[in-house]
Length: 415
Image (cartoon, rainbow, N blue to C red; front, side):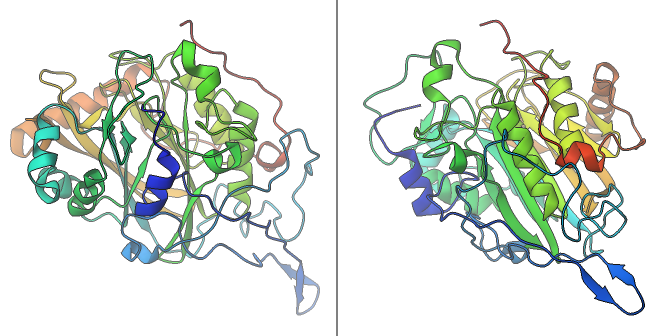
C-alpha cells in the first residue's frame, strides 16, 4: 500500500469499503420481553439497523447507509453466559441455527481478488466504465448483494511512499466507476495491500444491509500480514490499520455481537498461503471458531488459486475464491468464478459455483462442457478441506455465541 494518502477519506468519499468510514458510535440495541396472551412469551427483536453502510449501489437490495463505528466493550468485558432480553436461543431467536428471519431468501454472490494492475490498469485508464467488461457482471447476475476483495490500496494521488513489501498494489478513484459499472455491491480492503479503518473499532465494524427484510451483516478481516509490517499495519484503539484475524478475541466478539441482531452473518477473510490449494494450519481452526461464534458464511481469498467449499455444520465455508479479475496468465491462477449462496436467515438453501477463466485480466464466464469440467474440478477441491457436501449438525450453541472468547485457536504462520 501507499501510506502517504489517507485511504479512509477516499473510501468515505466514494462509499465503497466495508470498514473505512468514520462512522458515529452505534449504541447497542436493547431488547425486552413482551408478554402476549396467557403467559405465552414471544421472543421479539426490539430494533435493528435498517440500512446498510458504504454500499456501492445504495439502492440495490434495499441497502442504504448506517453509522457503525466504535463503542463496544473489549472482549474481556463481562458477557452474559445466556442471552438477555428476548434472545432465548429457541426457534424464535437469531441465536438458533434454525433461524430464518423474515422468511425471505437472499442470494449473495462472492468473488475473489480484483486489482487493476497490468492489462487491467490499461483498461481502467482507457475507460473505467468498461474496465471489467461484461464478464464479471454475468458472473454475479441475479444476486441481491455481490462482494469481492479489492486487492489494492485506493489512493487519490500519486504513490510517493510505497511500503517495504514485494507487491505494492494501488489504484485511483476510477476503480470505483469500474466496480459500479460491473454491478458489484461491496468490496473489502481488509487485506495485505490496503488499510481499512482509522482504528480497531472501525476496522472490525460490520457492513449492514436489509435485503428482503433480512438483516445482513458482513465482517471483513485479514489473516495475511507481512511479518515486518504486522505490528504497524494492525489497527488498535488509537491507530489506523487492518482488522487482523490474529486479534481473534476481537474478531470472535464482533461475530457474536452481529449474531445477536442479524439474520445472516458473513465473514469475508483474506487468508491462506499463496498457491496452496488445501487449507493451511490457520484456516480450519479459524473457520471453526467463527462458526461457533455465530457466522453463517465464512469465505475468503488471497491464495490466488481456488480452494474447496462445503458445509461446516450448518454453516457454509469456502477456503479460497481464487482470482476474479487479475493479471494472472496461466492455470490454476486463471481459474475464476463466483460463489452464489441463497440463504434464508441462517438456513443455507443452496450454493453453486459459476465458473470463468481469466483472459487479459478479466473473467470470461464458461459454458457447456468447459463449465461442467470447471465445476467438477472445483467440487473436487473439497477433498482436503474437512468440509462436507451436505449440512450436518450445527457446531454453534447459545453458549458459544454469547460466552466470552476462550482462545486463541490460531497462531501466526512462520514468516
